[in-house]
Image (cartoon, rainbow, N blue to C red; front, side):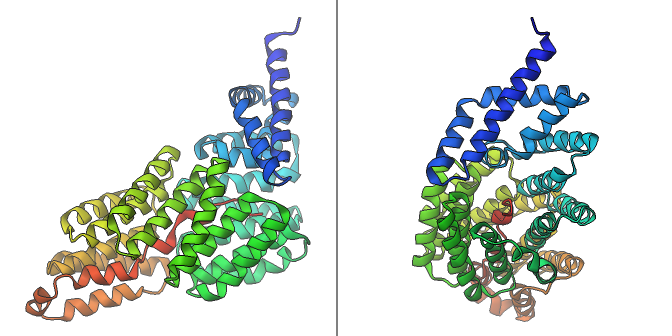
Amino acid sequence: MPSLKEARLRHSRYYAELLNQADDSSYTGQAGLVRGLAQFDLNRANIVAGQAWASLYAAEIEGAKTCIRYAAFGETCLDLRIDPREQIKWLHAALTASLQLEVDSVIPTLIAGIGIAYSMLGEIDRAVEYHQKGLQVASELADRSGVWMAASNLIDAYLMLGQPEQAFDLLKRYSHLAFEATGPRAMIGATGLLGTTLQAIGQPRKAIPCFQDALKFSRELGDQRDECTALVHLGSAYLDLAQYQEAYAAYDEALGISQRLGDRNSIAIILAHLGDIRLSLKDPDQANDLYLQAMALAEARGDQIGIATNLGNLANVCLMRGDYQNAISIYEQELQLTRAIANKLLQGAVLLNLSLIHISLVDDVTARNYLAEAEAIFMILEIPLPQEFMSAQLMLKIPRPIRHAFKRLGSWLYSRSRFTRGLSYEHSTRSA
């Protein structure tokens, strides 16, 4: 009769193999992905228990090997079904085991996974640290595909931090590695990343063909996750161009895919963008409902950037309704959260928004204080001051009696600019 340890390790090995099979199935087209996720859902409790036992015995060779398999070869299922903080635990356990056993081939993938999980939690600075470490490790291992994976993830993180110039420099330096590989999957990653970078530097029209190519390649491959991502990015570019009908069509199709897959992260992102469309079309009530749905999903996943973004969205609704006090209250909640997660980019955006509201209320002292703090952050980030900053400075130079006559102008400027919307968290997806 096997000992308790032997029984646990046998259980752990069996469900690691089942997880690997479910994940492999996810790469065989739409039916395979749905089948793989259903297999994971059916066996979730046993898979989670198996990983815990593998971690418990990770000091031994058998436990360490199994621990690696849970994190390194179950990527799709983990991304769609396991909370990011729990993913980090699994990935760290596997990374420790791979270093112990000197299984170098999986180390770049595990480091990348940790960085992406931190991105999903809104801890972008920590994500950058891991992606930089992954780039270094992959370079030392002469793993060219690992170098591109780390570089592309680092580009995503820089975009989330509002540093498109650094992202574009990395893209130019490493993009040749993306095209060394052939086939649709390699092209999805390369064209999608080029599109997001172009959009971030203010060229959404040039980004659209890139996203259309990524969409085409994902459909050729039958990869619905990448298809959903391409559609979301395509919708975002159309939204930047105020092409609301095209944006809605892309988001609606992406929503259907993400709902079929049970991908709560993508659903939250899409609902928020659909709210953006409704707000742009002067429908604050429906926008508010969509933002609240997105907020609930973000809270369930512990997605701090998602929560902060949707707080800003709800404040936008208040602005459109002329409810300045509630808008200020919600922005202050968002400001507190962005400070807690040390996201300087969103923090600067919120400070600018608060400045614009106080300008519209002719509260110049408070407006200048917020504006000065926003300017300091933008200087630290070494990014150009946004157009709305210049608008705020201009408004403060207009005599107060004249501004009293145009009290709503400040909020109108903000509602037209939608500064924070383009900084959404959709880039925190695992690169192909």
